[in-house]
Length: 421
Image (cartoon, rainbow, N blue to C red; front, side, top):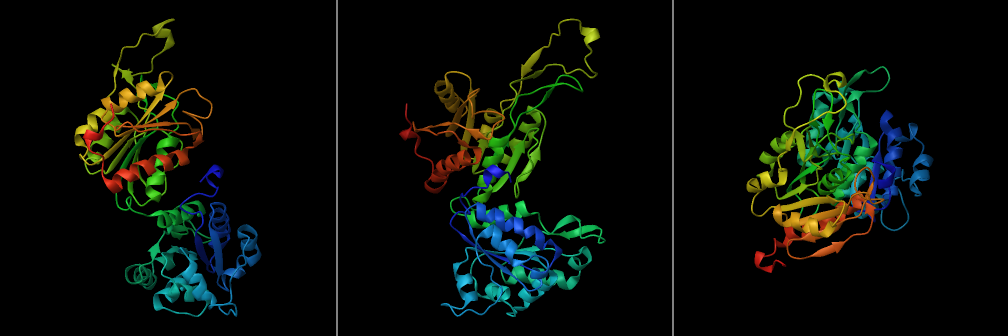
């Protein structure tokens, strides 16, 4: 997660997260989790076990959250502390969740503040296991983990596979990285109707059309806008597939990411998936043309002379060619990047491609278009609706766009008789 994203925003803003920390070496990473959640606008109540305090001192957590750390279950102020924390929590995250913590939680123990909070809360509980891979593979640990999920209704995040503590080698048991844990808290905080369980397909990034084994035709798209939309839909509870052309961006957490190269590959990856979609967002910057006859060997300047002539042909129009596969109830969203006559050309594309909503943005304008973290878009819908957004970070553009789509998911698409001219 980049620094730009770490400002108060939903679904974290104005929530209370109880962050339980137990005695594992990964506890030092959880300071970053507490810091990021706080910067995103959450009130973070840190509850470390006595063993956790041997790895990270309470002052570290107080310094990044601005709040006192809770260690003792005894309180003389109002309701018992564990009851207050459990009642106020919108979510409980335990990271790292050691083998000991999983055992105590599964048994319903109440021998410290953290386990009493787990017994008293009705909020979602996320457990991030972290331990040696041999411990994680132990049948009793796995049984405890299953009991926590299948009987108690808690949710496991991880563990990941990779390098463990010094001298322990590699294997499954590594705690999920802090930025990913923050994303998972957002997914459980943000899950809401009408998005929960919906199928969303997003295309993103450029395509590359080969000229020879070395060179290709492409464009300057980074994929940021499509990635932001995929992430936002996942945070709201949707099941998201992102079909992306070449991009340096990491796969969004929780999103099925399919990486492709050419327009034809993007079409082949997208077409079968739209058949079960509730929402399809065509945010990719697909190359309009490709070489009619890509060379099998490198095109050499010495062989071509001062001029190189290429015969180009159209690439498949992904939105048009997948339209028939989309369910009639699915919401289709397109993008239009234009250098001139923005609204007119976007309006034409809206009708031609059968979109319900199109986001038009000007190419070449500072703070909009390719290779920047912000965008300025004009939203046009099939029924004559028009909304001009100011320049916003792309994740906030995604929020505004999906808010519009969410209204149609909740209420149904307007009748075609209501279409504007």
